[in-house]
Image (cartoon, rainbow, N blue to C red; front, side):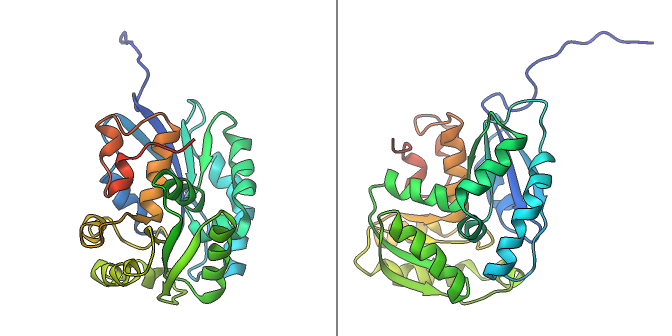
Length: 253
């Protein structure tokens, strides 16, 4: 027996997002669940990635990005797609990443954590930055150079100098809080904690309260930027669900 049915617009009445995560990422999906409300659909794909974070390993992801992008749903337009690797976007190049993703999803806005962090820092009016990474020096240096070329001054820097992704995903948030607080004592406008595998969501508000200045993380900035690119703004409940001052900020022009 064939039954009658009706159709609607499907999931994601407010926004439809796509995330391209690293194969080794263990953190972003859990933090994204804290931000994305019931009116926001989020579809995930994974890109092959090595267990170590080195410039050579990061560059290798470019070859698999077309396949990972094409695995996201294509029947309905995704409002924004995020390639979820701060260091990978730096090494491959944000423009290269966006061009690859748009071949499969030409109508979607595309971002990544470092592009999002730059937009977030500008939206908050921050110029002098305390910069925390878990990376080895070669990777940290590449992101630092990108931030400086984007007009920011790094007033303080610290790193765990760790290249194993599994270890990064297990760094205690209390350790990250201590590092952020120390960096925040420098003459900075905000602190940026880089890496999508670094857990931060439970300590961002505490860090901001203690420092009296904004704290930005890769996952926080990426999710905020994707929502803003999708038209979910700070004047809506859905646009303020994330941690920290950033989620009360509109995207800078």
